[in-house]
Image (cartoon, rainbow, N blue to C red; front, side):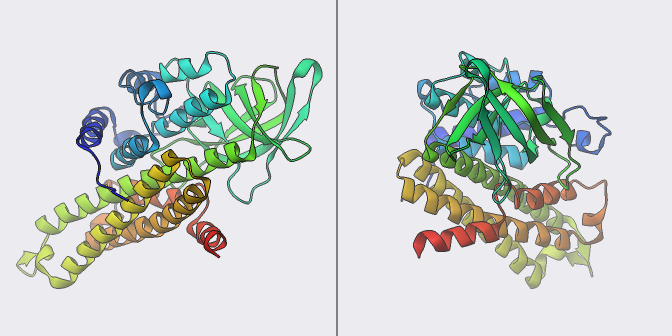
Length: 358
């Protein structure tokens, strides 16, 4: 499989990196937000105007291979924007054919909708029939990225017979409660979403095939891995800059052989993680369910571990400087370590990988 990106994809990644550099303020991660979301609607609208939110829609001609590049740049910038989640919602609404014009509104930046689905091993959200074709939702999803600023949620639920259901629930519906989560990662917003007898009206929900729900969960796990690759790549860049400047015993520490080896190991880990993520993104686009499951499990497992190693090595090579609150290194380390668990930890995906190849 050719995993070299095209000139157009390289231009896309470069444009997104420059745009995020102008709009991402890392100082905001240190500030007391008092429950307010880190990213505002104006930033989301600006991203939509660039075509990033609707990237997966058929009319845009985009693909998961393109979106993974965008999400990687979000991680590189430590941006709080939930663009990957919103893009997945657009595609899911288009494929399922419900929700009225919500997919158009999300793609245009007029509304932010993020997916709400349990992490692997968590209890599912339960769906039961209500009056007049409505659907009642009950359950709690412990952690949802971007939930604080969302206008609505795309909930993945399970009906009484075990069949999956997608439901579009406005954030202000009775029975929905958000609880801001204090996370190791302070560059993004996280919240728990609780649903208690939340009634979703007819036309705003639909039963789907198990394949559809599984694909959405897998895509979300993949893009968490892509985000971690971007953050790890930024840690490599920061570390190389530091070891070229820091002097000890009369010479820059980057001249010591042991430091060179550590930097080389970091670069190899990032590239290995990046390759597995790109392979999984292309498998998502190819549409082969078996290859998709295999590649996503591989990417989430390998990228999760590799990026975590990069973060630990970057901290060690920065020495005492890396432990300070004022240095930005800890922001990326936190993001990588949190991302290692989102969508399932590496041990979960390694076990799944063994099941798939066994």
